[in-house]
Length: 200
Length: 162
Image 1 (cartoon, one colour):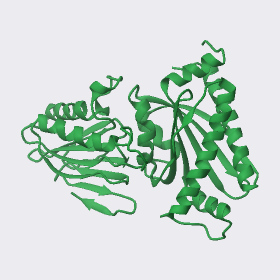
Image 2 (cartoon, each protein chain N blue to C red):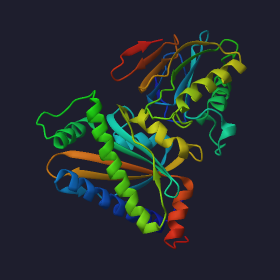
Image 3 (tube, each protein chain N blue to C red):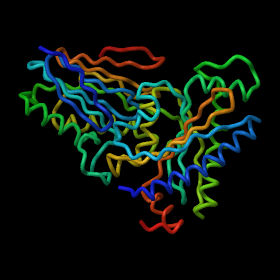
Image 4 (cartoon, chains in turn brown, red):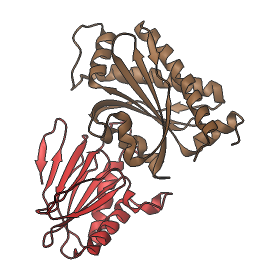
């Protein structure tokens, strides 16, 4: 499906995007942010929930769609410990929040997602010369499998195998881990290769 | 007879009988379509993601779409002796997980999946005797081939037997 060179390129591109998002998060929280090496996965649909700890794992997801150039779906996924900790950092309170989250808390999480997604795509945009329009964020706290459905919808109509890029960010010593899933539309991957002059 | 738990992932299906149990985890906008032949205790479950094959590019996997998924399941159940005139259907899933301002087609996919499942079943004259669909929450379902009971588990909305 993809050559190892192409996979390497996608990994590098996502690393640059994630680096930019990490800088934004670091500025926002005044904390050190650690990044994991991104993984580029080509998986059968049925196996995709495994990337998020299994279909029944309780997670919070913030979902975006990008169009006009860098067309893709973006899903930020956090486990509940990380959500609670992140909220306490944002609001400067000691007691971590539990679901169900208040409207203010949800709005804060969506705004963080918004800033991170924009930074991520911003880096990809200056790198590839492709523009983008980002949708408004949407948030849900539920089973990982259920949250993935919408993100997979577009890609699943083309193939039973999908390409997902996963990045993970960790906030300093705070045990906050945010997973970032990027699901490029089928045409976007080719456009990235073309923009970088990679023909095979 | 030995009991088997058959796990059904996205865009997959399974058929079992007697003591077998068919399970699918974390349905969001997807729909779990369960068919049951009460005489022979044959059960089938398909985990569909999209409403109609004709609308989409990939034509390889029938289990991915409501219309072709229902027909595939009926065919596979008939292969081991079930009769389509005896089949009864139960549905679960079809939620809208994310609330967006401005209801785009994309976000209403759960609703469209449920409607397409009903339509496909109606065309084959298979009655839907129970369903647990819609809402904004995920569902895990377990379908028991012997009695045709369908267990629906949610996070925060409780557990239901339909």
